[in-house]
Structures are given as structure tokens and as C-alpha cells.
Length: 61
Image 1 (cartoon, helix red, strand yellow):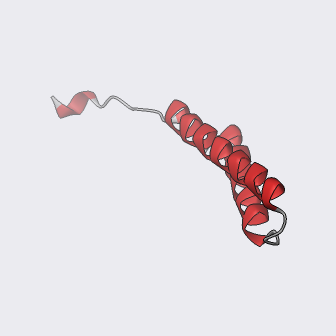
Image 2: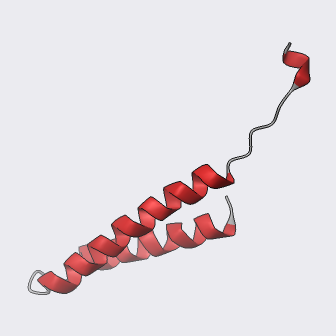
């Protein structure tokens, strides 16, 4: 994985954990952490697709 993908993974993981461990009366903060987690997870997937390298093997012909 690229460095950007690792960064987005860690941000998504920590923001998800923060959203889950928040007390129930902190609704708006929990929602913001949940939204941040979703955005980071989407950026993680985009970074993974962009960093994927496809190797061409000419011996497959």
C-alpha cells in the first residue's frame, strides 16, 4: 500500500473508533466522526485503486 493509502486507512480507523466510543449524548460529534470515517474510507479505496500496478507478462501469449 502507498503512504497515502496507509494515512487514509489510519484516519478512517481512528475516526470510526472515536465515533463508536463516544457517549450517546454526544450525537453531533459522533455524527461528524462517522462522516469523517466514511470520507476517509472512500479516499482509501481511491488511493488503493490508483496505486494498483498491473504488470504485463508477454509469456502469456
